[in-house]
Image 1 (cartoon, rainbow, N blue to C red):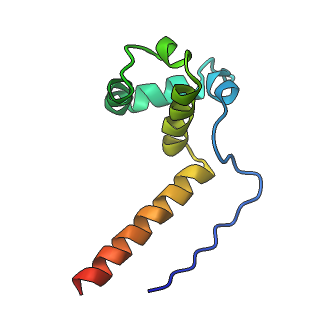
Image 2 (cartoon, helix red, strand yellow):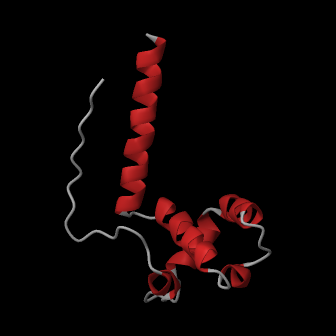
Length: 100
């Protein structure tokens, strides 16, 4: 089974940077704050998974900062989210092919 996918890409964000997550928009709300508020359960699950009690603990490690960037990018409108979705689609097609 072969599958090719082309994703148009011009100037879209691939992965949020930490400064992008922290800068406030004209309403005084950062992307990270917004995502934490619309996905509170997922945010708490993320903190539990990385064994941190709060956001400040994430800042102490490059690896945890990368995990934070990925968490936000998977929930924002970034190319990372699109690619991840296409990979899930691929796995679903492989499973369907296996079941047939």
